Image 1 (cartoon, rainbow, N blue to C red):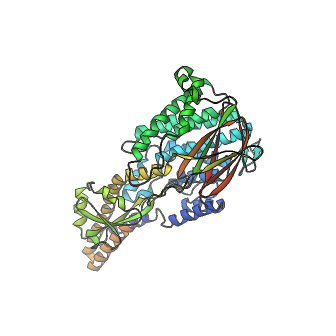
Image 2: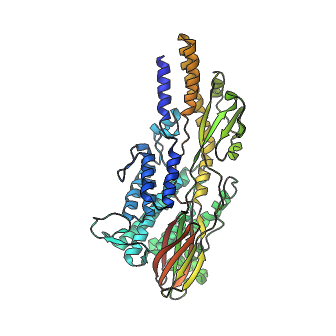
Image 3: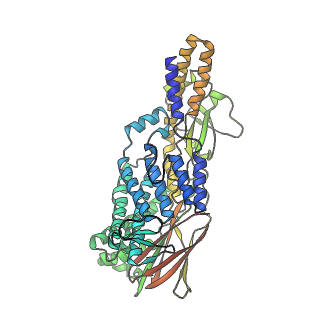
Length: 531
């Protein structure tokens, strides 16, 4: 009976790793964000990850996720200092967890995937640095007088203040530009390079918008030096090269809609304008793309909606429980028949070519088990975007100068869906093998109990099998406060001050005022979502 107690203790301990109420709390947080009730959203984040205020999460395995979620909420509240605080720590954790920890890998192999510390997906790592860079860029433009937001601004000159609208004025605008550039350099030259080197079979290898943004950032800086111009030139080149590759890779997938339709129209223009300053000889033929006399440019970057978050798909083995339920999806892996209940079961036929470990299958089916199943993370079916934003530019007299639609420049939702899909096959085999091993362990414990008492043995067999199935919890963790997509547009304007207004599927927003300087770019980001 000692073996029985040990096995059941391990199985029951694993069951506590992730509460099944997490999805309800995530939805409550998203609903609260839609109503601009950020206090409730933050409280839900704390409940999910065991955190408290700004003190960090209660469990180390949730540490990265907690800081990523909190940084997203800070952005929505225009809380520059907390955004910097949370993204700085998140960036350090990303660096520390680029390699999978041995303890986490072993734990997930024995219990379930939620036991390990969350390391983040590659595309999430890139977003940490993008958020951080944009945070410094906005503060730089505010302090320089380029941008006057619609919300109240408080300049903190001694580091004593916190909260929404508080700009860090303990450093000047030039330092903020440099920190924005440094975060962008880290994002592209370090993180993206490591991502591409380690990608293997995963489709997320390049992020063309990260490169495009880095190049644009240089053109927003006051008097960038030659090395910065050179950086921008390289970034524009990579973006122009990577956009067609992204379209070729993702547009073929029938499991989701890839919303990116082509290379952003303004990408070539920015590349040419930077090149005409940095290396006039190679870009002389692009002179027609240069600014007209007395003009500068406005680049609007809209982060809209919410990214798809994984849901639980429950899978059972038909051979173990009899006929599949009426409303379930049946599929085969090798000679084993399964059925699944949950969202997005249509992609399961792609698992048919997987080979399950023969010894595990033999041990499992030879044990006379009563219940066998496990859970996998999947995404719900994708939906086509209802419509993109419209930016309206007004002059100082209140007259509409320009109205222009935005276009998708980065489909984060597709990155999330493709990443999960790329991991699904190996994860399925790992999960099945682990679940079967638990079942075999429960069976061995039942056989030991059977030697002492038949009734106890039979109960142990059924109960152990059922509990082993219940403890197979799908790992649905993700940075679910990320935007669904990023859209953008660039507008050339005569030098001067303008009022900005953006309309989107969830309503409209006053973005404040921007001052356009000759031969320079101003970048104004916005975060929108359907209320």
